[in-house]
Length: 360
Image 1 (cartoon, rainbow, N blue to C red):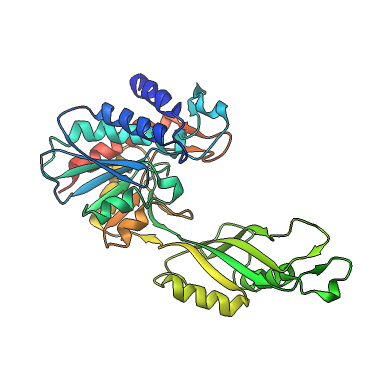
Image 2 (image 1 turned 45 degrees about the vertical axis):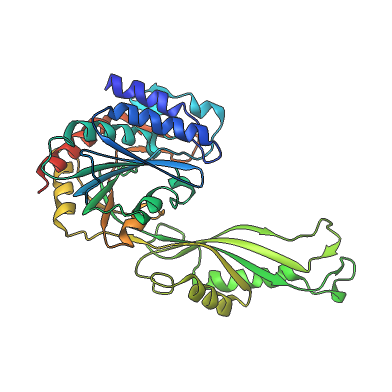
């Protein structure tokens, strides 16, 4: 544990945010160095985001299982890149999400990959926090395949078999400019936009508590006006929509179809900036049941869990490959008090080892 924590402190100290390509590469190299020699390392790069795929042997196989970890983090103040251990917790940006888990996966891969009677891969990416298209998705587009994927995102040793899809759109409304003292001479585009937002929120009201349903977050509203004494002739809103696999208004539909339906609903023009499908793995599959059993063997409940946020598992799910999230515990991801619960690291490693040793 001491050696792992020392490596985690070094890794968390690397400011591996999307705008720092040098630090993304540094974080990737640190984890690859921990895996050590004796493996094939395929390196990938897409739009400045490096990633790697590690395996035994000289030729890339169809993997029985892939361990997937991302090494990028969201921005944070300087203090969060000075990790601190106290009260059984490791504090710092990326401690929970998910640098500690990445190191555990690297250690388990190094130990077991040469011994298992099946092909195992370690997939390290550096762009999950900004969409995953240049890491996991990029590798899949270049032919990487697997029978089962374990993504080390935080889950407190629960097995995540479902996560919601993500849709990011812009609503646009237009009107007629005028002097603010004579609003009857103009047509306020911002008021049209607010009415359009209200129509969407009438379909998807903001929930008062946690729900497994489609939610809409109005993230930003803007007009091009520089002066306050002007009736805006144009206005734009940015919406973040998260949807479960069961919502057929979004799941399984194209960006064009969704834009048309939202335009009909809201009365505003709609631009789809990004669309990511929901993720689902068969909760009754042998691999999921085996992973649950391994978590229980390590002293944890191993319950199934649904996650509201999008993750790289959706890229596998879209290609009919089962992927689950399974990681250690902690709290505060993306926040000022993010930490990894160190009491869960040992059980997490033990569960991964038991699961991989038991795979057929």
